[in-house]
Length: 562
Ligand SMILES: Cc1cc2nc3c(=O)[nH]c(=O)nc-3n(C[C@H](O)[C@H](O)[C@H](O)COP(=O)(O)OP(=O)(O)OC[C@H]3O[C@@H](n4cnc5c(N)ncnc54)[C@H](O)[C@@H]3O)c2cc1C
Image (cartoon, rainbow, N blue to C red):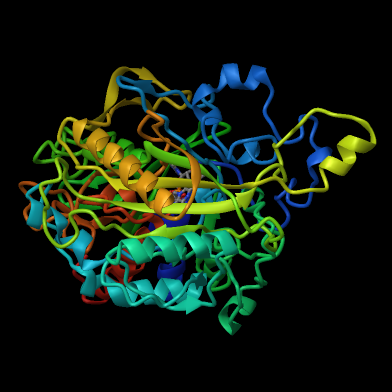
């Protein structure tokens, strides 16, 4: 009864892809998810609500801020979305250094909540560690992943423009979104002054023009509502619930099992491989074991580290595959500390349609072709947008009567914001480990996070603030205000590492196919596998790595190598 070909731990972005690929190849697959079921369409209770349908118009009350300070710092958390976020108190962890761990425990994981920005890595990111001498060299390059990027892009549906940039390779794009008039003006001025800084419209997982494969999935065109984090009644954006999981289900090979907290992976010393997993029922706490020939660990970066660290045996007393003691180390994230805001005078009679689900991007231009001695390593991608103030939900102004009503029919002046997404350097001291004495409600050791920004990050943020301010000044913006927001690591929600890939088992945990060097039938394909973090949004790369590894696993099973 408990025997499957494959077990996948976690049903978020990467787990959904593992399940889809394995089921399509005919493997009976058990998809274990610690959270509750969330069925596409049926379980999106707020998707069509208006602001006035919420008791606090979408904001969280003070009491909730006081009880859940970490999750309240996430921009997407609010009255309309709170049911898809983990509240601080429900799942405690120990912050040796401040770390805002943002989680979604349900079928679909954080795929319900993500901001859907999707850029491919370029050769510059894969070659970075070897070129600049940090972390360990990646065991794969862009050419290894390119066909798998294409594979996942076609199925998920990615909108974008073919920009022909070596630092941001093009993909299989649906039609792009459009910049508004002020963004076009700013882009033109930036490219005029800085020819090495191309400005492009963002690429995102939204169906601007659904293709037959998307219609077959039961998904429709994005309506530019930008209420995505509630779940989309049109299936206009990619999440596991609307796309990969139902696709896996229709093969008849998938068993999706919510409320299943994976405690650890079981290792058989005689066979020299993993045989299954130990699961605790989230509601009854009953313990059950399930067996499979291969196991995909996709619980999201830090929980994947936790599960492996907790999978101890005589052979692996420090965690599964952890012969070199590096499991849990070299955690990296994205530097989001630099911000610039500004105003723009002009185009007073112009507006734009809908709430576009992407922004304008300037791919990395720092330390790109070589290390440039700027005082910091690596680079950052910049993003910006322009909009009319006073017309967004949350732009409350006090008032009453006719004059007030008249005033709110007029959009305010144009405002501009700019932000950064910088590469951080993976370091041994940035790590997670298990608490020796504190456990959660299910008897699983709590995670200790010991991860921090460093001097390199702050120098990079300062450079972004200077460059961003100068670019907006060149574009004619006024009242430019650049600042470091000093946000905690974690709030970027792009944490990676701890189970990094590499050629050498002495310095890495996973091989070039995402298999544990010392336990080949266990695959890790979520953010935990990342050797470095690049400056692109990460999830598209997790999807491509997962699809590639799953197809390799199928081949290896056929050859009886696993
Ligand atoms: C507000 C927000 C905005 C974001 N914007 C972007 C963006 O624009 N672009 C981008 O690339 N990324 C973005 N991200 C990040 C993106 O959501 C993650 O990179 C992605 O979801 C990671 O996929 P995953 O499969 O590793 O983890 P998840 O999607 O988090 O799924 C992990 C699953 O594992 C389950 N799980 C955990 N532990 C266990 C256990 N012990 N047993 C069983 N199940 C377990 C969880 O409940 C969860 O369902 C954003 C995230 C958020 C929250």
